[in-house]
Image: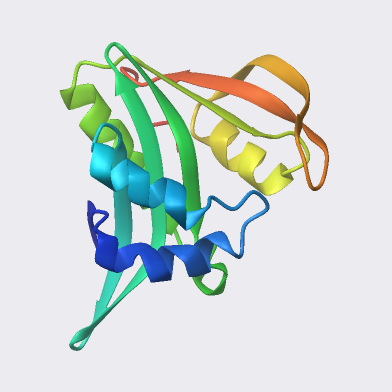
Length: 153
């Protein structure tokens, strides 16, 4: 597996991953993001023979010394195989090199699997946005982690 920057060629595969998430991002927003080039948008790609398949991705906004993880998602068929962990570790490594010390995120409060993943990785709750998500309605937990500390997982 390798982790590399997202390109426009990747968008159809990314749309497939997004269709399997609770809060899918429109491909049009990702297309705009690629044109702007401000944020970190990376994909985890498996290489089998001459075919590459995107199995996960993340997007983060970086304004040192802080960063915010906007999305991390993994293809349903390969979840719970460490891809999300590799993506998060990749992001944190890049952020530390950029001089960031804190990583923020928000997550659906009822997404127990994601909340557990972030807690396992040293994130803790710092706030709550009631009714933030739609379809289905859910609160957003605001979480943060000091990324200057060694990995927790």
